[in-house]
Length: 153
Image 1 (cartoon, rainbow, N blue to C red):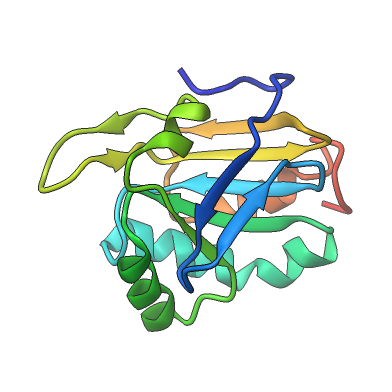
Image 2 (spheres, helix red, strand yellow):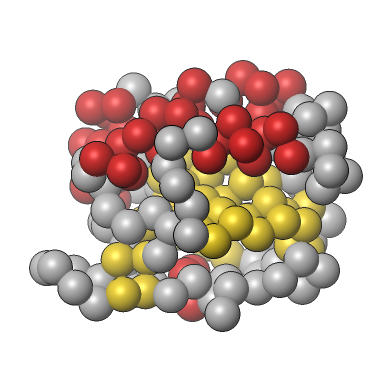
């Protein structure tokens, strides 16, 4: 089961698409969205939409990160092909997903994280979205920020 609003957000570290180690303690407002696989239809839609809304997130003071079980090289190719302006974090062993209680499903060639989004701030979970429909999700989360006590929503 994914973490719930009010739960402490686990500190984490993972490499981004440039091979840089990113460490997050979620003191600052952050959207962390888990997705199954780079360069697939739904994941491409979701990534493009988060990128399209990125200026709104930044204006609200909220960072955005995507996380999947793909590796750094896969993330680099995906970010480049989609022109993404935010970090994709590699979680090939599923440790980050596990820390957030995100199911990692076996299937296909490799395990894949269930599509789940967290809004985090002040070291805690503020919002959780499960069973995410990639279309319209980024704008939905952005619109919900005020209800979650963050940004200008």
